[in-house]
Length: 395
Image 1 (cartoon, rainbow, N blue to C red):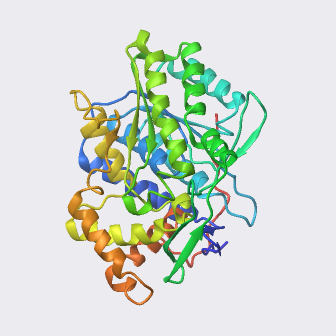
Image 2: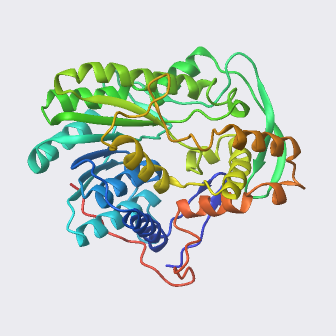
């Protein structure tokens, strides 16, 4: 079938298998071009099919030549209907890993469930024995707690009072004001249940009890802070409460890993275009202005550049990790440079529908958004008939 992007609001309903493969191969080639990493050998990536999780898996495999197990929840293709992009990404990754002689197996299912945890542990025991790095990179808006059976849904709301500021519809380029009503305590509790650290801790407990964690094991989860501009709706809102919980959980897990001399840590990453961030009011406009500024400064990074720098310069330097006052690794350091934020603030004050095409990088934002679904890559013939039924061998 000929596959074109089909939009519904902030979601693309189609994905291009050859474009997704190009995305994966581009990331692999970047890692290879940067040189090897003296890093992990057996890696579990929970949330491995898109974004930072996918880039972490690529960096582990093609930077450190690690064996990897990826866990994700993606829809397979059907005749006349494309798979989700994560399916095509993971199929492409496995194909490339096999060509390179690297071990790579994947489990498709609800990572929040006890069933998927047990299945993953059995695969580790059977094939790898022990794991020395666990990446936790889930980004689901919904979670069913396996212990209680209760389904929780996250919300994006400010706390205490309504929040009003500018945002942009990145499809049309129209800048407008948006207001978001404050949350309830139930909203906070549900968001923490979905996006906080509870499931990360459950994974680490299960892996530890099964005896599949190596000495000096490391686990890394991803977070975001952002500027004062987005604080009311993000870091000091419902999602911020969940991120606080996630970051506190790192200390709890580290305490439990003392017998293995292991540790858990949170990496605070840069703002990037993701399916989730595209739906957050204010964030697309901020990212558009940030991209413009960072590209002009020559310090812009995508997911793979961020993850390679995290592994090479932070996690596996042979020295003690450089952490902030709250014990977090900061690879958002270039984004949060005072000079960068001052420029973004100045652009924000000027931003409207007329000025944005000149002062922002909405074109780059749109390009990155389409790339998430396999569209817009050089060398891919989007007018050609392609097979949407890309198979993937699952564990």
